[in-house]
Image (cartoon, rainbow, N blue to C red; front, side, top):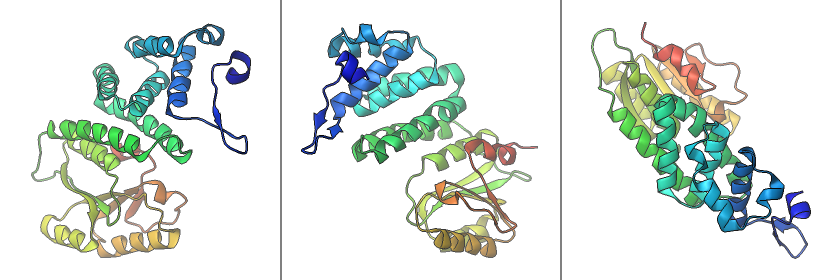
Length: 271
């Protein structure tokens, strides 16, 4: 409608006359959407030049607290590889809502948006790596600000990703949630062999293993891995999350599925 009625876009076309949109088109669409969300009429936006549209959007996140708008602002920063803008949006939301809410209400939905853009071929691997490393830096700093704790009665958590799993942002956030609530965390990170889990079990005697499974290895392979964990560590509670757990129903007695980050909180809260 915007294209036909207002001539806002002039998309490219394939040899078979199918529309496609490049990075500049994506930036323009996001900017138009942001202005429209902030009360600008499409008819007025259509009269602006691209530079004017982007200029108006540049300062909107300073005054608009709607998370949907902030997600658009982060998306623009990602596409433009604009670290300063990304930092400004993230910092303003952290100051206003706190680090935990900024992660759950802004960053998690933002990465859901990134996933959609990835599936449609709209963003490149470099865009995802760019923002992932920025968020990873924030998580590491937030974790380092939490003083390590240990002692009698302090729950012990081992956090890891299985072999082949490398995307650790959710695991880092889980580390932050646990440490901020005064739990002892042994963070092993990504690509951990099963034999290493046996070694840390014998050394530290953790109360919990926590892992996130995202690799699409097939239901049978995932279930076999879970069964081995449950069998090898019968005295340890095993908490599992991630898209590979979707559709999993019957779990061993010592395995619990966490569907979202907040499901970890009942375990994390020290009683």
